[in-house]
Image: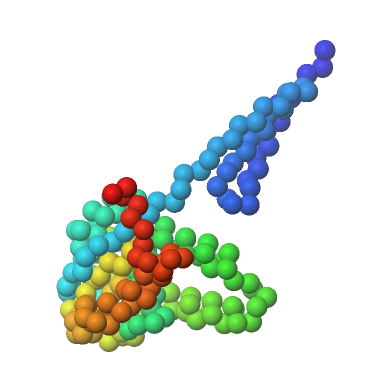
Length: 202
């Protein structure tokens, strides 16, 4: 009796999250489905005044190291912010998610999209955390924000913003303008126009 050799086929769906393995033997097929884990989310909290050394290296605050405990990162991408005079430091896992978002929402056949992408990626640099938890920040990027020896590393969701200390000290952290923006942005997240719904069950 002839026996067909097992054939294993690997298929990934459009979402990029589900792997399907098909094993065929004779006239029978066995399908195994595996759901990939969701991407790890890192949230950076706090702002810290740090000093650059003569080589342009900065010690990454211990709090940020601790906040990456669930997904420790050694490689980062650094770029100039598109809105403000600061640099944005992306952990590689956050950068890859950003790239995935851009791929899904832009077209290489759209002239405006291509112009935006060129500007977005212009000047980016990969930086690596050394054995002493220091990052070497490129001088050309530090010059773009007018950085002195004292800088501020500020957590902002999944990224770290790097500011010249004098500029960061001038940022408004409260007052009527922030209250207005909070109401305008957060107050209209739901159809009823109210504040975000309480999801804690209280």
